Amino acid sequence: MDRQAIVNLFQNESSFNLVSHMLPDGDSIGSLLALGEALQNMGKEAKLFSPGGVPKKYAFLKGSAAIAGHGMPAGAGNVAVVLDSSDLERASAFQKELRQARHLINIDHHVTNQFFGTLNLVDPEASATGEIIYQLLVEMRLKITESMAEALYVAIATDTGSFKYDNTTAAAHRVAADLLERNLNPGALSQRIFDERPLAFYLLLREALSTLEFYAGHKIALITLSKDMLQRCGTTVEEIDGLVNYTRNIEGVELGILFYVESGGEIKVGFRSRKIDVSVLAGKLNGGGHARAAGCRMRGGLSEVKQKVLTAALDLLRQNKV
Image 1: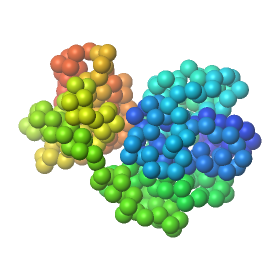
Image 2: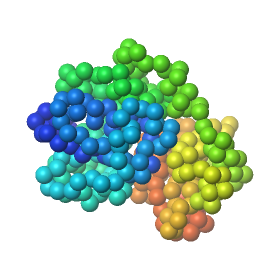
Image 3: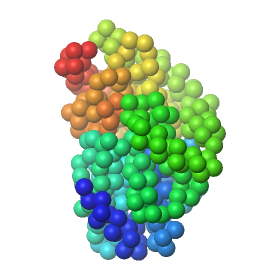
Protein backbone atom coordinates (compact mmCIF):
# COMPACT_ATOMS: atom_id res chain seq x y z
CA MET A 1 0.00 0.00 0.00
CA ASP A 2 1.00 3.63 -0.51
CA ARG A 3 0.45 4.75 3.11
CA GLN A 4 3.72 6.64 3.56
CA ALA A 5 3.49 8.32 0.16
CA ILE A 6 -0.04 9.49 1.06
CA VAL A 7 1.15 10.82 4.43
CA ASN A 8 3.94 12.69 2.62
CA LEU A 9 1.42 14.29 0.26
CA PHE A 10 -0.80 15.35 3.14
CA GLN A 11 2.20 16.94 4.82
CA ASN A 12 3.77 18.59 1.77
CA GLU A 13 0.93 19.59 -0.57
CA SER A 14 -1.14 22.69 0.11
CA SER A 15 -4.48 22.10 -1.61
CA PHE A 16 -6.84 19.11 -1.72
CA ASN A 17 -10.24 18.17 -3.12
CA LEU A 18 -11.92 15.50 -0.98
CA VAL A 19 -14.81 13.48 -2.42
CA SER A 20 -17.35 11.00 -1.03
CA HIS A 21 -19.26 8.47 -3.13
CA MET A 22 -22.78 9.03 -4.46
CA LEU A 23 -25.65 8.32 -2.05
CA PRO A 24 -23.12 8.69 0.77
CA ASP A 25 -23.45 6.79 4.02
CA GLY A 26 -22.16 7.71 7.46
CA ASP A 27 -18.72 6.27 6.79
CA SER A 28 -18.24 8.29 3.62
CA ILE A 29 -19.48 11.57 5.14
CA GLY A 30 -17.76 11.04 8.48
CA SER A 31 -14.42 10.23 6.85
CA LEU A 32 -14.77 13.23 4.54
CA LEU A 33 -15.41 15.64 7.39
CA ALA A 34 -12.71 14.29 9.71
CA LEU A 35 -9.95 14.28 7.10
CA GLY A 36 -11.06 17.65 5.76
CA GLU A 37 -10.90 19.28 9.19
CA ALA A 38 -7.54 17.64 9.90
CA LEU A 39 -6.04 19.05 6.71
CA GLN A 40 -7.53 22.48 7.35
CA ASN A 41 -6.07 22.45 10.87
CA MET A 42 -2.67 21.79 9.25
CA GLY A 43 -3.09 25.04 7.31
CA LYS A 44 -4.06 23.31 4.06
CA GLU A 45 -6.86 24.23 1.69
CA ALA A 46 -9.30 21.33 1.73
CA LYS A 47 -12.52 21.52 -0.26
CA LEU A 48 -15.16 18.88 0.39
CA PHE A 49 -17.55 17.40 -2.18
CA SER A 50 -20.33 14.83 -2.18
CA PRO A 51 -22.37 13.90 -5.29
CA GLY A 52 -25.88 15.09 -4.60
CA GLY A 53 -24.99 16.73 -1.29
CA VAL A 54 -25.23 15.48 2.29
CA PRO A 55 -28.09 13.22 3.47
CA LYS A 56 -30.31 14.96 6.00
CA LYS A 57 -29.53 12.45 8.76
CA TYR A 58 -25.84 13.49 8.74
CA ALA A 59 -26.40 17.23 8.38
CA PHE A 60 -25.92 17.69 12.17
CA LEU A 61 -22.20 16.89 11.88
CA LYS A 62 -20.00 19.96 12.14
CA GLY A 63 -18.75 21.14 8.75
CA SER A 64 -21.40 19.33 6.72
CA ALA A 65 -22.83 22.62 5.43
CA ALA A 66 -19.53 23.26 3.64
CA ILE A 67 -19.76 20.03 1.61
CA ALA A 68 -20.60 20.96 -1.99
CA GLY A 69 -22.57 18.88 -4.47
CA HIS A 70 -20.96 20.49 -7.50
CA GLY A 71 -18.27 22.96 -8.58
CA MET A 72 -15.10 20.95 -8.09
CA PRO A 73 -12.17 22.80 -9.68
CA ALA A 74 -10.52 20.88 -12.49
CA GLY A 75 -6.90 20.85 -13.50
CA ALA A 76 -3.79 18.70 -13.51
CA GLY A 77 -2.34 20.57 -10.54
CA ASN A 78 -4.93 19.33 -8.09
CA VAL A 79 -4.58 16.61 -5.48
CA ALA A 80 -7.83 14.67 -5.05
CA VAL A 81 -8.83 12.21 -2.35
CA VAL A 82 -11.70 9.76 -2.91
CA LEU A 83 -13.04 8.26 0.30
CA ASP A 84 -14.92 4.99 0.87
CA SER A 85 -15.46 4.20 -2.80
CA SER A 86 -14.62 0.87 -4.41
CA ASP A 87 -14.43 2.39 -7.90
CA LEU A 88 -14.22 5.81 -9.52
CA GLU A 89 -17.67 5.50 -11.08
CA ARG A 90 -19.21 5.92 -7.62
CA ALA A 91 -17.84 9.47 -7.59
CA SER A 92 -20.55 10.14 -10.16
CA ALA A 93 -20.44 13.64 -11.69
CA PHE A 94 -16.92 14.31 -10.35
CA GLN A 95 -15.17 11.62 -12.40
CA LYS A 96 -13.83 13.99 -15.07
CA GLU A 97 -12.22 16.34 -12.56
CA LEU A 98 -10.79 13.43 -10.56
CA ARG A 99 -9.19 11.88 -13.62
CA GLN A 100 -7.42 15.18 -14.31
CA ALA A 101 -5.85 15.38 -10.85
CA ARG A 102 -2.08 15.25 -10.57
CA HIS A 103 -2.44 12.85 -7.66
CA LEU A 104 -5.56 10.76 -7.07
CA ILE A 105 -5.58 9.25 -3.58
CA ASN A 106 -7.91 6.30 -3.01
CA ILE A 107 -8.68 5.52 0.66
CA ASP A 108 -11.11 2.68 1.21
CA HIS A 109 -11.86 -0.59 3.02
CA HIS A 110 -14.00 -2.47 0.46
CA VAL A 111 -12.62 -5.87 -0.52
CA THR A 112 -13.82 -5.17 -4.07
CA ASN A 113 -11.80 -1.95 -4.43
CA GLN A 114 -10.37 -1.51 -7.94
CA PHE A 115 -7.22 0.41 -6.88
CA PHE A 116 -8.09 3.26 -9.25
CA GLY A 117 -5.87 5.86 -7.60
CA THR A 118 -2.34 6.91 -8.42
CA LEU A 119 -1.90 6.21 -4.71
CA ASN A 120 -4.02 3.63 -2.90
CA LEU A 121 -4.62 2.93 0.78
CA VAL A 122 -7.09 0.05 0.85
CA ASP A 123 -7.47 -2.05 3.98
CA PRO A 124 -10.29 -4.63 3.85
CA GLU A 125 -9.50 -5.59 7.45
CA ALA A 126 -10.61 -2.16 8.66
CA SER A 127 -14.20 -1.95 9.90
CA ALA A 128 -14.72 1.34 8.06
CA THR A 129 -12.86 3.95 6.06
CA GLY A 130 -13.22 6.08 9.18
CA GLU A 131 -11.00 3.62 11.04
CA ILE A 132 -8.30 4.08 8.38
CA ILE A 133 -8.58 7.88 8.66
CA TYR A 134 -8.24 7.62 12.45
CA GLN A 135 -5.06 5.55 12.03
CA LEU A 136 -3.63 8.12 9.62
CA LEU A 137 -4.35 10.99 12.01
CA VAL A 138 -2.67 9.14 14.88
CA GLU A 139 0.29 8.27 12.67
CA MET A 140 0.64 11.93 11.66
CA ARG A 141 0.35 12.96 15.33
CA LEU A 142 -2.54 15.29 14.60
CA LYS A 143 -4.96 16.45 17.26
CA ILE A 144 -8.34 14.78 16.93
CA THR A 145 -10.88 17.45 17.88
CA GLU A 146 -14.31 16.72 19.33
CA SER A 147 -15.97 17.32 15.96
CA MET A 148 -13.49 15.06 14.17
CA ALA A 149 -14.05 12.38 16.80
CA GLU A 150 -17.82 12.64 16.35
CA ALA A 151 -17.50 12.30 12.56
CA LEU A 152 -15.21 9.27 12.86
CA TYR A 153 -17.44 7.64 15.49
CA VAL A 154 -20.43 8.03 13.15
CA ALA A 155 -18.33 6.56 10.32
CA ILE A 156 -17.43 3.43 12.29
CA ALA A 157 -20.78 3.03 14.05
CA THR A 158 -22.78 3.17 10.81
CA ASP A 159 -20.56 0.79 8.87
CA THR A 160 -20.60 -1.75 11.70
CA GLY A 161 -24.37 -1.44 12.14
CA SER A 162 -23.96 0.00 15.63
CA PHE A 163 -21.19 -2.56 16.31
CA LYS A 164 -23.27 -5.64 15.51
CA TYR A 165 -22.07 -6.64 12.01
CA ASP A 166 -19.34 -9.20 11.35
CA ASN A 167 -16.84 -6.43 10.53
CA THR A 168 -16.95 -5.30 14.17
CA THR A 169 -13.45 -6.05 15.43
CA ALA A 170 -11.49 -5.51 18.61
CA ALA A 171 -9.61 -2.77 16.75
CA ALA A 172 -12.88 -1.04 15.89
CA HIS A 173 -13.92 -1.08 19.55
CA ARG A 174 -10.53 0.29 20.61
CA VAL A 175 -10.82 3.16 18.14
CA ALA A 176 -14.40 3.85 19.21
CA ALA A 177 -13.36 3.85 22.87
CA ASP A 178 -10.63 6.41 22.19
CA LEU A 179 -13.07 8.61 20.25
CA LEU A 180 -15.62 8.45 23.09
CA GLU A 181 -12.99 9.91 25.42
CA ARG A 182 -13.46 13.19 23.51
CA ASN A 183 -16.74 14.18 25.14
CA LEU A 184 -19.07 12.29 22.79
CA ASN A 185 -22.57 11.14 23.69
CA PRO A 186 -23.03 7.70 22.07
CA GLY A 187 -26.68 7.46 23.11
CA ALA A 188 -27.61 10.72 21.40
CA LEU A 189 -25.59 9.84 18.31
CA SER A 190 -27.21 6.40 18.08
CA GLN A 191 -30.66 7.97 18.33
CA ARG A 192 -29.84 10.39 15.50
CA ILE A 193 -28.28 7.96 13.04
CA PHE A 194 -30.17 4.72 13.72
CA ASP A 195 -33.51 5.42 15.35
CA GLU A 196 -34.89 8.76 14.18
CA ARG A 197 -36.69 8.53 10.85
CA PRO A 198 -39.22 10.88 9.24
CA LEU A 199 -42.79 9.68 8.78
CA ALA A 200 -42.13 9.45 5.02
CA PHE A 201 -39.64 6.64 5.70
CA TYR A 202 -42.28 4.50 7.40
CA LEU A 203 -44.77 5.19 4.63
CA LEU A 204 -42.12 4.00 2.18
CA LEU A 205 -41.36 0.97 4.34
CA ARG A 206 -45.06 0.03 4.28
CA GLU A 207 -45.06 0.17 0.47
CA ALA A 208 -41.78 -1.74 0.25
CA LEU A 209 -43.01 -4.59 2.48
CA SER A 210 -46.15 -4.91 0.34
CA THR A 211 -43.84 -6.06 -2.51
CA LEU A 212 -42.12 -8.74 -0.40
CA GLU A 213 -41.32 -11.95 -2.31
CA PHE A 214 -39.61 -15.18 -1.24
CA TYR A 215 -37.51 -17.68 -3.19
CA ALA A 216 -35.46 -20.80 -2.48
CA GLY A 217 -37.70 -21.97 0.33
CA HIS A 218 -37.75 -18.57 2.03
CA LYS A 219 -33.93 -18.35 2.02
CA ILE A 220 -34.10 -15.34 -0.32
CA ALA A 221 -36.38 -12.37 0.38
CA LEU A 222 -36.67 -9.37 -1.90
CA ILE A 223 -38.50 -6.06 -2.05
CA THR A 224 -38.95 -3.66 -4.93
CA LEU A 225 -39.12 0.14 -4.91
CA SER A 226 -39.74 2.66 -7.65
CA LYS A 227 -39.40 6.38 -8.11
CA ASP A 228 -43.22 6.61 -8.11
CA MET A 229 -43.32 5.05 -4.64
CA LEU A 230 -40.88 7.64 -3.32
CA GLN A 231 -42.97 10.45 -4.77
CA ARG A 232 -46.19 9.05 -3.28
CA CYS A 233 -44.60 8.81 0.15
CA GLY A 234 -43.00 12.25 -0.07
CA THR A 235 -39.52 10.91 0.50
CA THR A 236 -36.16 10.98 -1.26
CA VAL A 237 -33.76 8.33 -2.51
CA GLU A 238 -31.59 8.70 0.60
CA GLU A 239 -34.39 7.13 2.67
CA ILE A 240 -33.82 3.84 0.82
CA ASP A 241 -30.71 3.37 2.95
CA GLY A 242 -31.39 0.59 5.43
CA LEU A 243 -34.63 -0.73 3.91
CA VAL A 244 -32.92 -3.82 2.53
CA ASN A 245 -32.05 -4.88 6.10
CA TYR A 246 -35.71 -5.64 6.73
CA THR A 247 -35.49 -8.51 4.23
CA ARG A 248 -32.37 -10.07 5.75
CA ASN A 249 -33.76 -9.78 9.27
CA ILE A 250 -36.68 -12.13 8.58
CA GLU A 251 -36.21 -15.44 10.39
CA GLY A 252 -34.93 -18.12 8.00
CA VAL A 253 -33.77 -15.67 5.32
CA GLU A 254 -30.10 -15.92 4.33
CA LEU A 255 -30.07 -13.36 1.53
CA GLY A 256 -32.06 -10.12 1.34
CA ILE A 257 -32.31 -8.17 -1.92
CA LEU A 258 -33.70 -4.72 -2.72
CA PHE A 259 -34.45 -3.51 -6.24
CA TYR A 260 -34.88 0.23 -6.80
CA VAL A 261 -36.10 1.13 -10.28
CA GLU A 262 -34.66 4.51 -11.19
CA SER A 263 -35.51 6.62 -14.20
CA GLY A 264 -33.56 6.03 -17.39
CA GLY A 265 -33.79 2.25 -17.27
CA GLU A 266 -31.28 1.79 -14.44
CA ILE A 267 -31.94 -0.40 -11.42
CA LYS A 268 -30.07 -0.18 -8.13
CA VAL A 269 -29.71 -3.54 -6.41
CA GLY A 270 -28.77 -3.96 -2.75
CA PHE A 271 -27.70 -7.21 -1.05
CA ARG A 272 -27.56 -8.20 2.62
CA SER A 273 -26.71 -11.62 4.02
CA ARG A 274 -26.27 -13.50 7.28
CA LYS A 275 -23.33 -15.78 6.39
CA ILE A 276 -22.56 -15.87 2.65
CA ASP A 277 -20.24 -13.37 0.96
CA VAL A 278 -22.49 -11.11 -1.12
CA SER A 279 -19.51 -9.11 -2.42
CA VAL A 280 -18.94 -12.15 -4.67
CA LEU A 281 -22.51 -11.89 -5.92
CA ALA A 282 -22.22 -8.14 -6.50
CA GLY A 283 -18.87 -8.61 -8.25
CA LYS A 284 -20.41 -11.01 -10.76
CA LEU A 285 -22.92 -8.28 -11.58
CA ASN A 286 -20.28 -5.53 -11.95
CA GLY A 287 -20.84 -4.17 -8.47
CA GLY A 288 -19.01 -4.38 -5.17
CA GLY A 289 -19.13 -3.97 -1.42
CA HIS A 290 -18.60 -6.01 1.72
CA ALA A 291 -19.08 -9.65 2.63
CA ARG A 292 -22.46 -9.02 4.27
CA ALA A 293 -23.51 -5.82 2.47
CA ALA A 294 -22.98 -5.13 -1.21
CA GLY A 295 -24.73 -3.85 -4.31
CA CYS A 296 -24.66 -3.11 -7.99
CA ARG A 297 -26.40 -1.07 -10.68
CA MET A 298 -27.90 -2.73 -13.74
CA ARG A 299 -29.66 -1.55 -16.87
CA GLY A 300 -32.76 -3.15 -18.34
CA GLY A 301 -36.34 -3.96 -17.45
CA LEU A 302 -37.20 -5.02 -13.92
CA SER A 303 -38.23 -8.58 -14.82
CA GLU A 304 -35.04 -9.11 -16.83
CA VAL A 305 -32.77 -7.69 -14.12
CA LYS A 306 -34.61 -9.57 -11.38
CA GLN A 307 -34.16 -12.87 -13.24
CA LYS A 308 -30.42 -12.27 -13.75
CA VAL A 309 -29.95 -11.40 -10.08
CA LEU A 310 -31.99 -14.34 -8.82
CA THR A 311 -30.13 -16.78 -11.08
CA ALA A 312 -26.79 -15.54 -9.71
CA ALA A 313 -28.14 -15.53 -6.14
CA LEU A 314 -29.41 -19.11 -6.38
CA ASP A 315 -26.03 -20.22 -7.77
CA LEU A 316 -24.30 -18.57 -4.81
CA LEU A 317 -26.58 -20.33 -2.33
CA ARG A 318 -25.87 -23.67 -3.99
CA GLN A 319 -22.12 -23.06 -3.99
CA ASN A 320 -22.28 -22.27 -0.29
CA LYS A 321 -24.60 -25.23 0.38
CA VAL A 322 -27.16 -22.98 2.02
